[in-house]
Image (cartoon, rainbow, N blue to C red; front, side, top):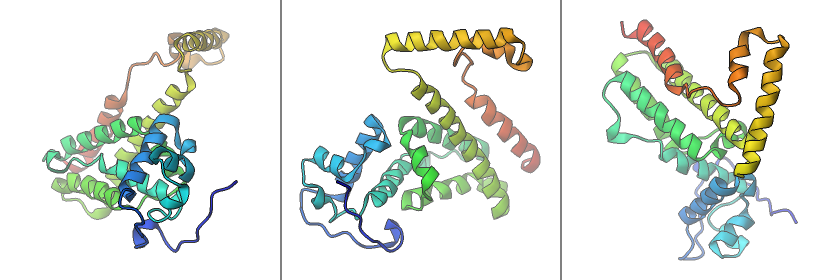
Length: 237
């Protein structure tokens, strides 16, 4: 039986629709339970019913705090976004600050890979998300750029970081969790890649194919340096 759909006007952030019905149940507890489910079982496992079961309450009791699953997804994303904030720990130098933010964004993305799926279908606008964007721009303030130039740099570094998380997450999901099955899967894929290397059809990636699946070293820092080196040439010289 499908979950009830409630008609709402505007995003959850623009409404004041919390109607607490139980002192023991809070919006924060609901969101945390949903985040825990998504971290453990993936985004598809999150529903009003699964969250209610985790909290040992009736599903309808959640609607006094969260109007719909769509609102719940927004709230989940924004809670995790708050974990990316550096606050007073933000380095004063713009480059060091961007490096710190990018690393934190990467780490949180790898810890909560479902956040990528949320961003595909939704536009995050929550208060923590806006604080993250504000921190990106604060990191670039020492360069005294106009808003558009600073925003272009911030989005370029963020897009690079999110792309890295997507790639690494996909690789992790591809490999079975069972060690024995993972060994068989990797062996099969490596045999296939070796055959492709010997075919002569892919002359420019032969060394990579022969190294095998996921054998390349982690290149996040190298890619980040390429970006920041270019920004430094353009704006900090």
